Length: 212
Image (cartoon, rainbow, N blue to C red):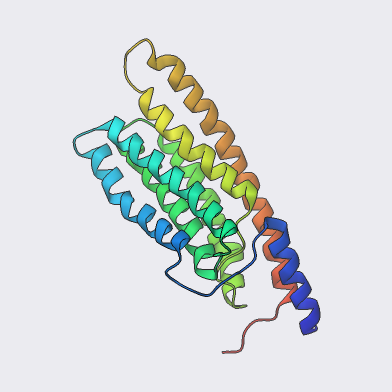
């Protein structure tokens, strides 16, 4: 395919998610916020599995969600969207999602089947589309709004489920609300996988494999 046509497809992929690159700089404010989010993962896991300080663990997740929202706003407002940010942001989201679900599974708060269901989604992407993209020079695809929404719902759902996991009367409706968010988040998580698959197929068809 001609280089011009490839450029059109690349720009179309960016428009589908609102992603454009403004800079190749590494130490931008959004990237630093993403790194801070990743550094908070061990703290959350210790709070959850060590002293069982659930309220503090939920506060860490709340801070993570706020910085996730903030880095996107800053990147767009101050034109600091970067290729590194495109990788860091979904990486932080994925790490938090897996840290939360695995930690809560170890605590016995969520069932193993939920872990398997979420793992199957990521595994299916990892063995199908991502290797082919990397052979064409793509480290990742632009973050899709559906994927961000699904991740947001899951990262909101699990702390709510955690808060509702006790024996008090007020915790029952909290748990019901949390599990409703889990169901919707999981459905959208899988839906976003099919959207990424469609984008990936478009890239695979348009771009040849890189020469070794």
